[in-house]
Structures are given as C-alpha cells and as structure tokens.
Image (tube, rainbow, N blue to C red; front, side, top):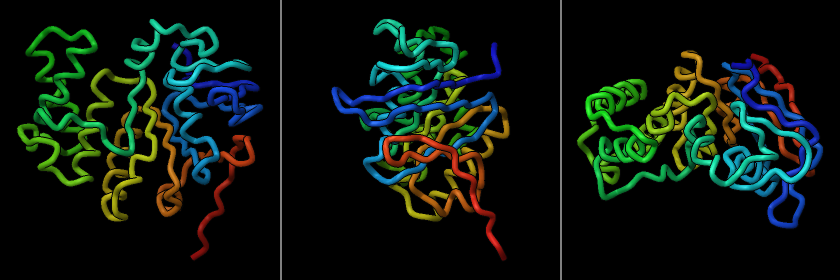
Length: 229
C-alpha cells in the first residue's frame, strides 16, 4: 500500500462541458488532514465529486486509494466508495430506521453478512464518535451535531483509507461545529486521512492544517498565517 492516498497531476475538472478547475496538482499522504477552502461556486463540490466518482476525470492524471480516476469504470465506483468514507453537509441519514439500523443498512449494502461482526463494528464506530448510547434512536430524535457524528461513524464503517468530508459543519452552529471537528481530529490522530471542504475559517484558525484553496479555476496550497496574540 503506497503512502500516497490521493494524487492529481495537471487534472482538469468539468461539470458537463464547463471547465470548473484546471491544472490541478494535489498530493495527499496517508495520515494527512487537509482542508479544501474557497467561496461557494469555486469548485469545491465538483472537486469532491470527482474524487468519489460522481464526475468523471476527463483530463490529466488522478489516483485515489489506488484507483485510477481516468480509467474508473461505472462498476468500480461502489468498490472505490468502500475505500472512501464520505460525510455530507446534510447527513443523509434514513429517517425510517434507527441509528443502528442506518449503519446496518450500509454494512449489508457493502457485503457484510455476519450479524455478530456487524454489531461489533457498529458499536466500535459509534463509540469513536461518542454516540454509542444513542444507537436505538431515530435520526429525527437527534440534534444536528449528533446526526453529523452518526454520519461520521457511518463513514468509518468500512475502515476507509480516505475520508472526504464535504462541508461537514455547514449546517451546524459554531459550538457544535467545534464538537464535530474534535471528533474528526481524533479520528485523524488514529491514522485516518481526511480531506475536508469547508468555508468555516474559524475552524481553520483553531485547528491549523494543510490547506488547499479553490479560486479562479485553480487549486493551490495556502500557507496559514499564524495568529498573533
């Protein structure tokens, strides 16, 4: 297993015929925590969608968790997504089943059969995000922050090599955002690689890390200014 989890070289990202980002060069190693920032409409979501196979990579080179994004076939996408954990802004939990039911649904959909194995995996990921006692609840009985923790637990189910978090604090108040961020930081310290799209600059100051910015159809690394006290 290479140390490189994600690499794009001279890649161009399109949404249908429109060029969204060009000459993209990005390198993420195992264990990194990387922010992707930029104003709304600068291509953060298109960038993320390209990484999990929602948009095809039409130009340049790209590899993610040992999959070649240029030659990625439709039938490979579910397998690629098993190696990725994707966390969305709007949680995407199923309201007709409990938290445990939500996680079980994902495990079954990704080929798990053993009930005991599934139960212990669910307990393990809920424990990691501090939600073990809420497994019997339905998503609508939880606060936004709790729902996002569950969404992070769901992303961890198949031990992903890379977690793509697309504005995971976008719908949360500042205090809850910090709590969710703490969960992501802990997961990162345990060795999970995370790429997080965000426009929450307060979080960047509080938890500085490598930062990529989308602007003017380009993606470039920005060096964060240290806060002067």
